[in-house]
Amino acid sequence: MLHYVMRRLGGAVPTLFIIIAGAFFMMRLAPGGPFARERRVPPEVEANLMKAYHLDEPLWQQFLRYLNGLLHGDFGPSFKYKDFAVADLIFGGFPVSLQLGGIAIALALVIGVTLGIWAALRQNSWIDYASMSVSMVGIAVPNFVVAPILTLVIGLQLQLLPVGGWGRPSHYVLPVIALCLPQIAAIARLTRASMIEVLSSNYVRTARAKGLPARLTISRHAIRAAILPVVSYLGPAIAGIITGSVVVEQIFSIPGIGRYFVQGSLNRDYTLVMGVTVFYGALVILCNLIADLLYGVLDPKVRYD
Picture 1 (cartoon, rainbow, N blue to C red):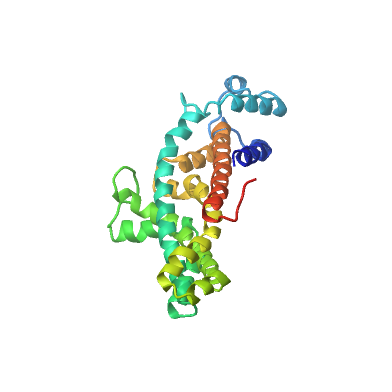
Picture 2: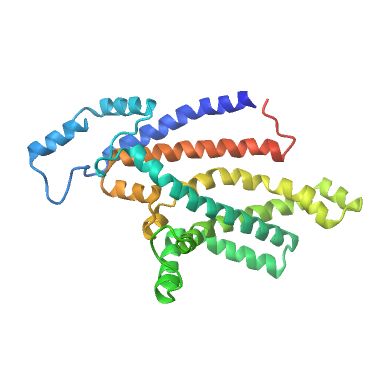
């Protein structure tokens, strides 16, 4: 397995390089700049700022300088958050995003798998149709639509929960709901489809023919095989829900990575946007690797020779 892990990590290097190069040059092609404001600074001051941050150099030289910094673990200074390095902002906001995303994905996994199994065991019943209809709505309506609706109805009109801030347990409820609803829908549909296929497989039929109770057949044999597509989905889903909650964190004023990413994009804070992009890319690669390794635990037929 160690050889497999090393080979996957070696293959991740060119992937990460393509992500870095694409994000770097796309940021530079965007109109405006980190020092372009409504009230422009004097030309000599702007020239000094460009020189201080090496923005007056050719693009290829800036790119090589940035790569050299990454090799030494340096994401560079933030252009807008004075006296803060990008690494400080990322690792300061990551625990918040990790906590929020971890709760959301755990809740989505429990509810989604339960709904999917329930719908598969009662295929073509009203329970199946109702749960899959709700799941389709959850997939079709993105979280940046759900979040303002929750804020307006539950937070402002009913005044049941706060619509912003972070720290108290009540602050978790609305953003977690907004984040986990699409994931619940996707996991429920994946689990249902996989469970229906597994229930019609030969080894499940054999277990039933030998007199094994339905509860044991499902818990010992069916669920373990049906969960494999969900494990494959969880790799990018976990990374996406942790660092991709950009709009949700912005709406609920949560000091996570997503909020920094939005502010960095609006302010053309090149190094901050690049740092979050590189961190997100590395996290996606790592989560996919962990999901692939879990296959060997859940499916004995999988080998990493």
